[in-house]
Image (cartoon, rainbow, N blue to C red):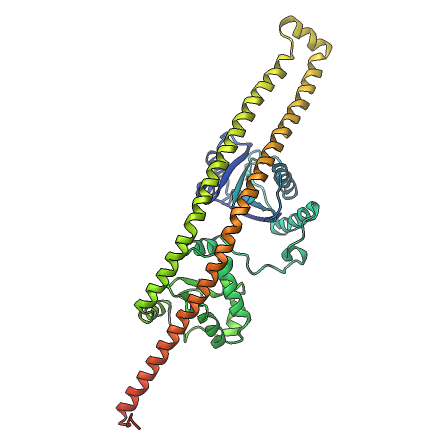
Length: 425
């Protein structure tokens, strides 16, 4: 599993994010351990309240567990991974919560620990946790027999198409896969060896370079959205400066926005709007099918949970009825019979719990296969729309170049006229 970890604060914001069922098909609070509260908001708020008695500002340790997209992973496998992580990092028996997210036919888990040791009333130190999480991630891949991704097969060979939460949110607001944007910038960077070459490469895809207010080089799309060049190319600011020099001679962001508004004609804006509207219309029926499928899946899970709860209560009553009552129960206790029944009940309860977990895993695996089939339709349509956006970007770039040439020709004529040169010759 790919493990992403961070020390953090913000109990309320993290709870809202983890329990967000608008951007996820399914959200399941699978465990709340060591807290008084039984819900996530209450549990993480407890950790915040306790941290106020210490000097710790980042009182939570948050981890996401992401298995490969095409592999089904059991609930127990996620729990085992969480146990191994807390043991390796020095967080055994610390209060924790586990939340499962499912989206687009994929399932991943979030685990949040409280870093506050209530006995010592201080935060547990987590030295080198990023190196430890990398090693643990690699070990989990090997244990499950999954092919190692490049970033784990050879340390340091990071996938340049990986993106942060902020990058994902920026792309999401524009309805574009962030990997598509990152790939555009990465390809433009690799195929250019100078500022001029990068400008042309980005303009072919509908982006214009500018001087950022704080970030050095930035790029703007034809709608005026800003992209940090170093962030979206995946290279350091030092590398950008070494290759491109200083951005001081480029126009600032606001001037570039004004120029874009002036140069993109009403006809081109109309065309852009038509392409966007067509894409939205194409996606609407798939979104409707997705929403219907999610509703059916949620009802199936609710029905399974209700059935398992009812059966669990009945089985617990059967186990409890095995104990004798009154004076007979006292004799059973003296003879050790009660202990034998207790041990048998515990083993049976564990087996019943494994049975229920296997049923949940089976239902989820079947539902994820349904969801992946729908996701293939999404992927095919998104691929076609990606090609539409490439064509649109090239047309916008060509329009801008034609307008630049027209303006340049007009300025040249004006200059020659002012010098008294016969334009008809």
